[in-house]
Amino acid sequence: MTATMSVDVYLSHDFAGFSVDAAFSIDSPGITALFGPSGAGKSTIINAIAGLLRPREGRIVINGREVFDSAKNLFVSPRARHAGYVFQDSRLFPHMSVENNLRFGWRRAEQPASETDIAHVVELLGLAPLLARLPARLSGGERGRVALGRALLSSPELLLLDEPLAALDAARKSEILPYLERLRDETRLPMLYVSHSLEEVSRLADNMIVLQSGRIAAQGSVFELMSDLKFALLLGSQPFGSVIDTRVKEHLPNGLTALEFAGGIFLVVKIARSARSRVRVHIRAEDVMLALEEPKAVSANNVLPARIAAVEAQGAAHANIQLACGEVRLVARITQASLARLDLKPGSDVFAIVKSVTVDPQISAV
Amino acid sequence: MLLTPAESQALFLSLRVSLVAVGAALPFAVVTAALLANRRFPAKPVVDGLVHLPLVLPPVVIGYLLLLMLGTRAPVGAWLLHTLGIRFVFSWTGAALASAIITFPFQVRAIRLALESIDAGLGEAAETLGAGWFDRFVNLTLPLALPGILAGAITAFAASLGEFGAIITFVSNIPGETRTLPLAIYSALQAPGGEDEALRLSLISIVLALIGVTLAEIADRRVRASLGR
Picture 1 (tube, chains in turn brown, cyan):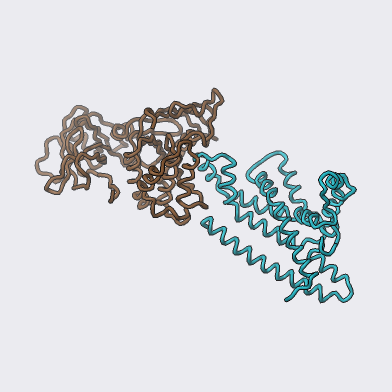
Picture 2 (cartoon, one colour):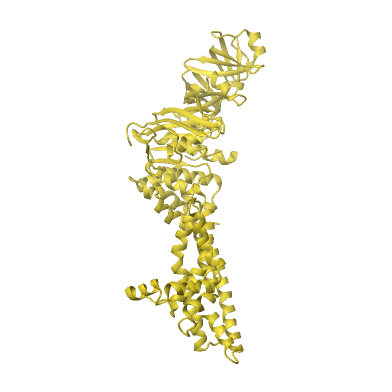
């Protein structure tokens, strides 16, 4: 694997009554989400990176190799870009078995993965029982996993995922999400993940680029952006909340697990994860209550001292509040009536009562 | 039903002429269909029209045009005979050529429909996986179009078995060389007291058609199953 991985994109493209103008760089492994509503230009961007669309103007560089430059009239064909693409509709070859689908890109790779790598991907994605089947005999979730494996085995330098879960129902989604998390945690492959689902993005992505009407509206780490009040305004009525990176501290005898993070400790119902392992938790803004004094008798397990960092009105009745809890930012959504009654302002010291901490479920047998 | 030597001669000649006609035209039909499918170019209506011409022209006209071009004293025919030693007139290969031209539109139409029904997204996926255009054509397009190719070949084969006008005009009616089943039936009807013979030959044609249709159905099912449909 190369030491530095980077993707630099600058592009401009026009459609009838709509244009996309975006510039960004990705220089870290892990998942970068391209997030935005339908028609925001997400697919245009990843299709341009893959070479399936030629933008009117722009420049795209993958790992230091120019693959598109309108000024030089340079356009590298998709087959030579080494960008693995996982399509929303999976696009498995219907006349080939799962195994032959998996090996399609592998056979054509300049530096094909070893048989051990193939076995690893098959194991990682749980594909062993499917190998002999034709795509028509697969469920939607299985198809998505095969498409993912096929792209991985083509030895890509970058993985592009175009809403791989959008066509699936909730049950199928939760079947694939843990595999994507394993992939994120086990490979060093940079991934660009197109999604309009905040839930997927907050579970999977490390960084995100928020697109609106063809322009980049916000960009940054998921942990920071999810607690950013300006981002909350972009979301409108979508459920909004913080994402926090924690580590398992210890499993307590009272049936709880203590998760430590830069701002303190969260107690959650015992999770099957070993000590020191990284756990991502989600706290919805609606699930955070604020108190001026430390509540003595309260059923919630998590009461954290915090300082108000910012206040932003949301609609006519609500206010979003950003709380500094050590180095970590939490968000709360309360009514404007409560805001006035408690006289909360930036700088006020409060106690955040967290009613619920959600931990992502994992694949049962890892 | 035991066949007389003349009957089996006509039967096997028919089969040979049709097989060669379909087999030889198939690669050209695939290329023509690929050219016409999912593509626009200025000369497309002309190419399209030429391909379909045999469907609307009387077969006798096709046979006569072939004779004008490929007769031993015609320019192309004379050249073929003297430089390559190929003679189509009065030969079963001429019958196959006439059949191939008459049935060409059937093949092109079926293959073109099959090509146009292939999801273009699969080609894009193959491209991102490193497959060039020829690779995609051989490993994706052709296998996915196989039901259409098969359907086209079978229709053309069946139509070819029945070809009469073009064959008799171009290569005449020579027993053992160009007298296929339809020509043999015609000859039997021309001969005094040949009605019984004509009926026997017609029965052979019917049985042949039934066997053909059944085999085509079985082949089609197998191909579709292999494509997971």
